[in-house]
Structures are given as structure tokens and as C-alpha cells.
Image (cartoon, rainbow, N blue to C red; front, side, top):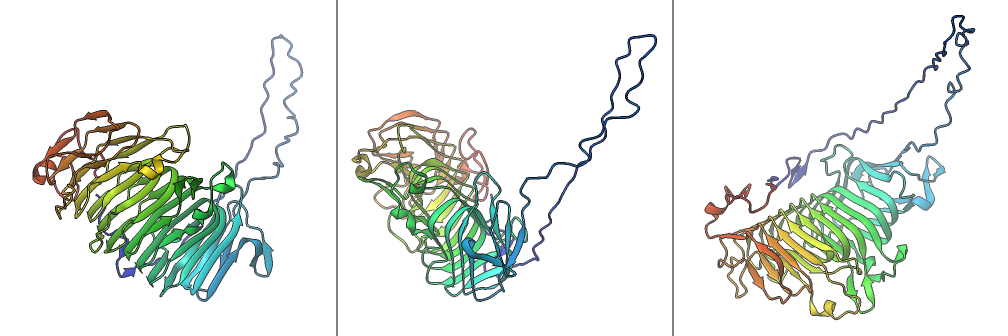
Length: 457
């Protein structure tokens, strides 16, 4: 299992190395062709290969591939604005192109804005990356707007570094707005940020009609660490009588770490999504001072939730209100997760609330819940018992198999409030004592063959 705190980070300090970016170029050489005559006579014809034909490849054609340029910006302080419509370097206006890299000088900034950068999604991304540690402290913000095929990265020193740091803020750290597509934000650290940490409120104004500008697509939030924060990632949206609002098509949330946060409620809240991948995340010691019905990950839509570890918390690990976008019926998968020691609520919840079912364009989604390890749910012993799954009406099928459940309020596997029924329900095992269920409370490796999380974290 991934350690609770990554070895490359300390809660109150960050080791900073000089960023090294090395670019390799390669070339190829071509030799002259050799021709062999077809001699079938006793008096062979004159050898025409002694003087080879002119080699037409000695001057190669012009290379039209994009070779990324590199630009250095920032002074290490003040207010930095990087505007793709007016990007000036050394007095010259530059049009950013596929494959370009913009290196942001390390230092402590009052604010930073990156906006109006759009390059074709068929080519390499424009990357904004730290050159030295970039720090936002005391309420300072990073704002991002109207970006397409762009990555914002704190991996300037290494793939595991957290080169952007946000600390000690009562307001938001990163705000997205406008049209954001084919976009990744990665390798950042957030500490003592009490409002939304990363949010995209503009999504609420988008009503999906099939057009490219009516939704966002291909968003990724990767390698992000948070300590003592409010809601970590908040993307607005919902399904209403008017249609889908704030829709994101294809979303990835992976390798985030969130710990020691007493009140955030939902760590990740996604209002309306088709095809999410939420995986390999670690959440520990959250919502100790929060008693509302939370989902650590609260999502409306469809996708996959796997390889996550959620421990010492309050709320469902995943609270999923599921549906498909159209008649192409989706299958939700929840698998290989470890959930342990919830003060309230079960491991997972899946349902279609009545307001969503009543909407004319609602389409159901299938569900599979398998190979999960879930133990010690609902230690407060509230009236609603803690189990593997809270299963409400989904108006579609559920497959439930190979799950290991232990040390709960009782031996029942599912809180079944549905009339939807099971397509499959087998090999779900309850064990009263955790010492009989798993080898330890670090790896959570199952002692019951064929059950539990098959990928030990």
C-alpha cells in the first residue's frame, strides 16, 4: 500500500532540486544504393553499376515536424500574466505552438494567470512548467481560462516533484474558467487551503446540446497532494429538466493524496460526467468534524472507480448517482478498492435519485461492484447500518461479486433499498474479526482466497 505521506514530501517542508530539462535530437544517414545486374549470358553486358546513379537523398527534404521551443517567463515575484493572445518574450510577440514549453521562474508570486492558449489537439501539448519552486502563500491564486491542449505541471525537477505549492489561504487556490479542453493539471501541493482548492464554477453555465462548445472534454487532475484543506476538486454541473449542465466528457482523477482535513465533506465533487476514471487515490483522516451525508468522491454520471484507498473517514468512499448520457447504456465499475474505518455510512452508494429518474432524458446505467475490501463501517453505530454497499433503485442491473467485508455492525453485505434486482450476486464474504479477514491493516491483503482487492496497495 502506498505510504500515507509520500517520501518526496513533508507536511511542513519541501525538498527542492534544480529542474533539469534535457532535449535529445537524433539524425539518420542514408547510404547510396547498390545495384546488382541480372547476368545470364556468357559475355556479360557492360557493368552499369560502376558509376552509381546520382543519390537524390543527399539533401533531405525539409523537416516539417514541430520541434518544441522553450521560453522562460516570470521574475519570481509579483503578478504574472501569461496571455496566449499577447505573449511577448524579449520584446517579440510569440504565437505558442504545439510542443512549446513555457518555464516559469521559481519564487513567491502574488498571483498568476494563464489564459487564451489553444493549439490543435492532434499535436503535442503546450506545457507550462516550473523552473524552481513556485509558491503561492497567504491567499494568492492561480487562475486558468480558455485553454486547449495544455498541461500545467509542477514536475520541473522530477516526475514525482510537487513544484507548485499553495499554502495558508482562506479562499480558493486554483480557479478554472471559460473553455477548458484537453487539459491536465498535475504535480502540486496544497496545505491549509480552507475554501474550494481547485474549482471550475463556469461549468454550471454550459448546457449540453451536442456541440463542442457545450461541454468540456479530456480533463485530468494528477499527482496532487493536500493537507488540511476544504473540498479539493469541485466541478459544477447536474442533470436537470433542461438537459445536462456542466458536462465533462472523459475525466481522470488519479494519484491524489488528501489527509488530515476535518471538514471538507466531498473531497472530489463532479457534477455531470461521462466516462470518468478515478483511480489510485489515497484519502486518510478526513471529515472528523463533519456529520453530513458525504461522499468522499461524489459523482453524477458514469465511469470507473478503482485502486483507491480510503481510511479513517466519515462518508461513503464513493457516492455515485448513475446514468448514461444517451441510449448507449454505460456500465459503471467499482473494483479493487480498500475502504476502512468509516465513522458513518457504508463503503459505497449507488442510486438514481427520484429527481433524476423523473427527467425525460434520463437513461440508466448498469453497475458492477467487485473485488473490494471493506471493513469497520459506521463505528458511530447510527441507525442506518454500515455495510459494503447502499443500493437504491438504479433502474438497471447490478453485478456484485468477490467482495470481502469484515467487522461491521452486522453480517449483512448490502443495504438493499432497491427494486432493481441483481444480475449476479455471489462470493461476497463477511468475516466478523478483521484479523481473520486481512493479513494486516497496512496492506489489507485478503486471507480469504478469491475475495477482496486484488491489487494490494
